[in-house]
Image 1: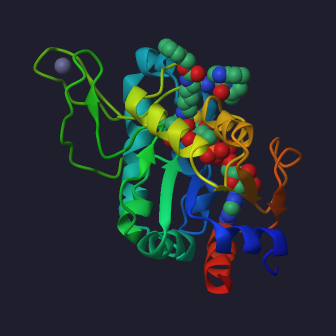
Image 2: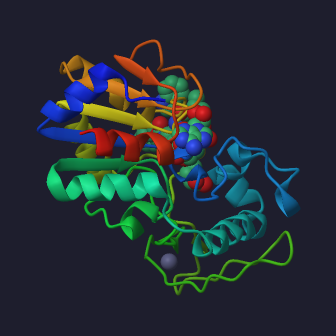
Length: 244
Ligand code: BJW
Ligand code: ZN
C-alpha cells in the first residue's frame, strides 16, 4: 500500500490541508464504527434509530445507557497512529480537522481547533434549556439508566447531533470554510452517506480543491474524488506523513 503518487505530490505542495474524518478514523483504536454490528446489551438495536430525538422522547433511559456505555468505552481506548500522524502534521503545516466523530481522540493525540460537526460526548446538555452539565461516566450494567434532571426540569441528554437536528451553526460554518479554503482535502474513514457533512468534499471540489479519500472500502464518494486510496487511517496517514 504505497502512497498514490499524485496524492504525495499534492500533499508535499499543499499550504493548507483540511481533513474530514468519520468513524473509521477511530476504528483502529477499538471504537466500533456507526455501521458496525452492535454487541452486548444493544445488539438488538440499530444505532440509526437510537441516534434520534424520537428515540430520546420515547425511551430516554435506553438512549442514555447506550451513550454511557460508549463514554465508558472511550475512557478505555487511546488515539491510534492515524490520529497521532495528523497531530504531528498540524505542528508543521496548516492542518484543519473537521470530524463527524463525537469522541475526543483527535484532541487526545494533540490536535487543536478540531471542528466537531456532530457535537461531542464531552458536553452533555439539558434537552430543554440547553445548559451544559458535567456527568460522571458509569459503565451501565443494564439496558436502561435514568438520565439526571436539570434544574429547569428537563433531562440531561448527550451533547451530540441526532438525525433531523441542525448541526451547530458555528461548527458548520467553520467546516464549510475549511472545505472551501484549503488546497488539499483528505476524507478519512467515513461512509459519506450522512448529510450535510457528506457534502463537504463536494464544496471543496467546487472550489477546485484536490480531494483524496482514505478508506479500505469504496463509498458513495469514491467515484467523485481525485484519488481513492484503499488504506486505513492508522496505516495510510503515518505512511503519507513519512513520505512527505
Ligand atoms: C475505515 C476503517 C479504518 C472502517 N480506516 N476507514 C440530504 C440527502 C439525504 C438525506 C439528508 C440530506 N440532508 C439531511 C439529510 C437527513 C440526514 C441524513 O443525512 N440522512 C442520511 C442517512 C440519508 N441528516 C440529518 O438529519 C442531519 N441534520 C440535518 O440535516 O438537519 C437539517 C435541519 C436544519 C435546520 C433545522 C433542523 C434540521 C444530522 C445528521 C446527524 C448525524 N448524527 C450521527 C450520530 C451522532 C451521535 C453519535 O455518534 O451517536 O452522526 S449518525 C452517525 O453517522 C454519526 C456519524 O458521525 C455519521 C457518519 O457516519 P460515519 O462517520 O461515516 O461512519 P460509518 O460507520 O457510516 O462509516 C465508517 C466508514 O469507515 C466506512 O466507510 C468504513 O469503510 C470506514 N472504515 N475502518 C479508515 N480502519
Ligand atoms: Zn435545563
